[in-house]
Length: 241
Ligand code: PXP
Image (tube, rainbow, N blue to C red):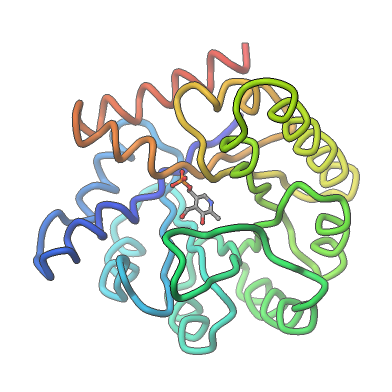
């Protein structure tokens, strides 16, 4: 069964815009669970611009589904996330001035750091995924450093206008997930997916987990969290049929 993790960072962004208590991402996470989400994803950034330590601690204590924490290989953050022991961590690249994660990891360049950190989390029975572009060399490198899963960056596919370029990007995703499967790794996908562009990607049976934030939270602001999450679950299920 394919899983939907809702990324709730934007809820924390709204709270931090006023340095206030609300909206509480923990409350949002519980609504996502009630609507049928299989898990919650948060990105704890080194600059703590949205998700805070308190959020991680409370999510760990209250979630009934799975907690997936995205982070860079920054020592303080790693120590914190290790103490939380989420169900899964996803390593992502991070640049201080970016609006959102801009691309996948260059696994080969950071292989030693990644290998050491992956081993530390695996020892604690935390499942480890690497966010990579749809590129065969990156998938092979992710396998080499010991990752149990790859999250394929769908950003470029989503940004391409419908037509040959989007088809080419979709084919890159297909090639990457097939290789990940052959290497015995789990296959996740995310970034830029919305209720429409998701359909051809969600039809790919090899993908076992989606991490989706912006589209769901943007719709939730207008129609409510429960409806926004349910509609995304329905879209994924329709694509799978
Ligand atoms: N996956 C990763 C690794 C991400 O960094 C993000 C954005 O935080 C997402 C998925 C979700 O992307 P979006 O908000 O565009 O759905």
